[in-house]
Length: 309
View 1 (tube, rainbow, N blue to C red):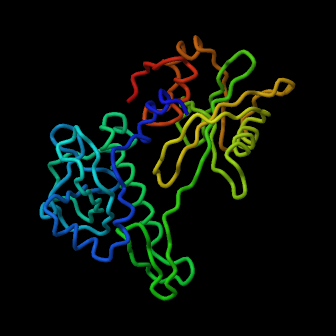
View 2 (view 1 turned 120 degrees about the horizontal axis):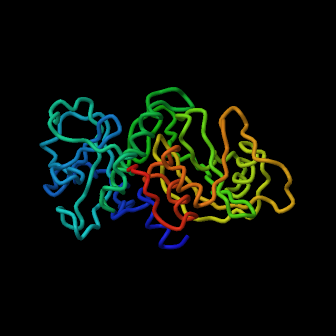
View 3 (view 1 turned 45 degrees about the horizontal axis):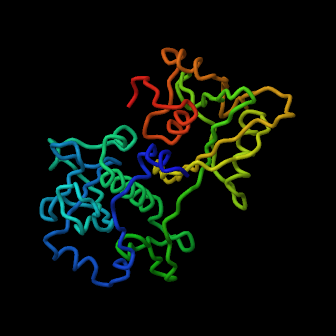
């Protein structure tokens, strides 16, 4: 992955030491709650609290209303944020945000590009791990309510002692080009009809990323592609994915047409760079927070001004 492409992945940025070793300390929460430098990142319904400057608001412990789940995110490494390097940060999921009703909240999809490296990393980490807690409150073995441990990074079955660890679902996404270097974009059945993006799908058990690229492209478009080349990846916690980006080419001897599967993909279109630039009043491209947008602009040769955040 080139560093230039990495800089175009907003949710891959971070300035946080996750401080993994601290999670093993039995008295971690006592230590954090007795440390006056500890700061809290409030999360409510998948959004993060913003300060008056548009960055994440990290509050003292006594300024936070009642919470349901807490997770130790680590220590700040940022040299440019208000809090000093080494500040411990804890995410808490609020049950009621009326106490903070006059504050603004950050939607990660919409504001991922506007946040600093530290704040983008913190909010992505917080939303991802809290989404996991919400979906793993009961043991898959006994059905008993699990208990958070190790700074919020493990849930334990109190009956069997089984430790349940966070999971991330890998998905591949491909920028497919043909012999004329046209880019393939598709419209998903779940989107508005004028929105077009790259083809993507989840990796199946026992499958490599590269094999998943070949399979997903064929399933959704009927095309046979070759030479999947890794570009980069970024977390996509909506609710629990990491998007792994590739380029791929249509096989030279493949004679078929791009045909949407009719279930997930309803329309497919090939674009030259000039054609894509000329269609921006007609179609909607993925938002700038997504890896899809970064891959499209990598092929395009620069930023695309379509008025979207």
